[in-house]
Image 1 (cartoon, helix red, strand yellow):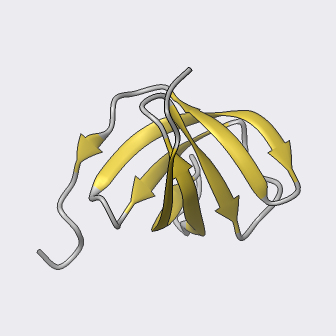
Image 2 (image 1 turned 90 degrees about the horizontal axis):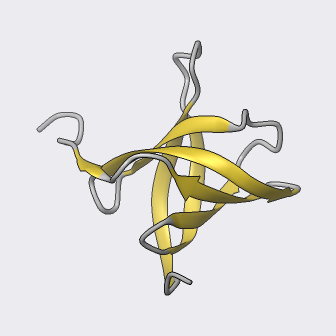
Length: 86
């Protein structure tokens, strides 16, 4: 099992077909996934997570849900991105 590291990373969820990102916090990270607290409970099973704190972006798949808390598996390796305005 991957070691989970506690974090408090400001992030956004990008949903296919929507131009408006959903704000969230990543509460812990491992090499293969994350625990996310989202502003919305009804997210799709697959989305892009943009972690602004670490300047990383990855495709995620929901493993489990409990209200607005979501466990996800990474379906793509984290990729670096340039923050807006850089």
